Image (cartoon, rainbow, N blue to C red; front, top):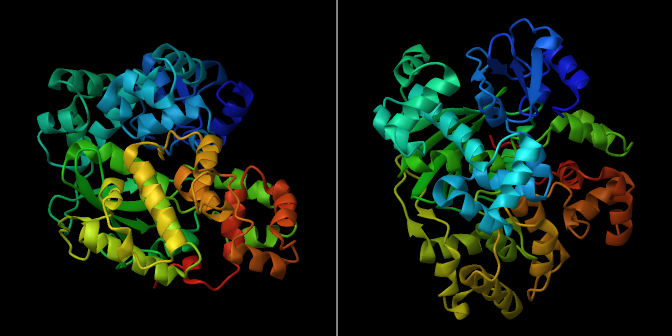
Length: 489
């Protein structure tokens, strides 16, 4: 979008928050870059240039605005609705791969050469992978500086910087303030009830309807790993350097996020995975406008706009749970998963109590005795085949997955039919156009709304909802009285 100057100028003049994260405005006369909704008086059009990323602004020598804090805007929805090289690379960078494995590791995961990845990112985003990762480190550093009392040296390494000097230079260059002054200017921190917890605000593009999002997560919560407590969804997180516990609470203009981490180096990854879980980088206005073009869906969208797709923090975990949920009720699937957690999950400490384990890793599940699984023999075979493929690396599910290719791999596994593959594509892989025409809830909703109820006919009818059929699924599910559609009391 940043190449459409006229459209960008209109967005800046109207201070339209929908475009925050889509592009950034750099002001030539001040050397500052802002989000489109910055509350200051807009500069003259001839003094504005537009960039596709904060990293590109920083590469061009601009500093972040202290008023609108563009580094804290929601991420571009482009990276969650595309499956090309650039989008997959951006999802991996957000997951901290460059900091952990370097640019060669990023390229290796994508299956391209380092040069090709750098060229593609530079062409579309105006910055290479190192610059994009540096911008992310700066944002994490600012977050820790302003929300914790940690020593600056500890913050530097937790944010991913190789040295304190690099940390100091980067913070001063990006925010035009040294770390100490940045902390002094921050609002006074409010104490938290949990020692060692970080309290954050996760922004999103309005509107956001939390009912089906948190309702789904709470209704399918696996005991010991997830719970709904005091208006918050809580769960354990398996992270690259350790583990964590997160509590997510819906608010009118942000999601309150309380994180307790065993290793602060996991902060960036934990935030990225929580945003992905709640689909916070979606563009609900664009999605709902497309779905409203169908007169059948329009009343559902108008009644409760801004529905998101509940996703996952661990793609392999969700695939296992999808198999456990084949042809059984939500309660039965939770029972199966809870037994696995108790037997094979890794115990963790929850400062607030209630959560006890990480969900078992594929390696642990691959070692179990299939005879101990209380399920039909065919589903037992499906389960063991899946976990062995995940444990051996023959099947990889991650943010960088190529959606069509991964779906083909899943369909080739025994016991994997269209419903299982489609639900994994929608909630684990993040495909916004995944559709579930064989789902009983969808077929029931289709009959009630006068839509075709056979899978083939319904798929043909759903063509007008593309590329947002996964969101249409949420609106169709919401016609039912199932607990997944309601925010828990």
